[in-house]
Image (cartoon, rainbow, N blue to C red; front, side, top):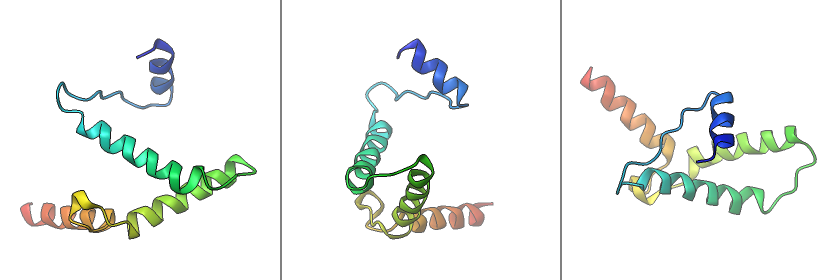
Length: 93
């Protein structure tokens, strides 16, 4: 990775966590989400201001988490997966 990129993510307070050798699945999930975001929002709408884009991204996040049924989660929404995981964590505590 370039020094410029590393400097930028450090400036933004983001920690770089590259994929493990022979285990790039996490990166693949992230790349697929970015593609979904582009196909369903960024390539189909134009935004007059950065603030308008910010609001559209927040709306997309909520719509995605509440309504998208993901195969890798057994065709349930990300919010349902999160609720189930938190419920299981409470039971384990």
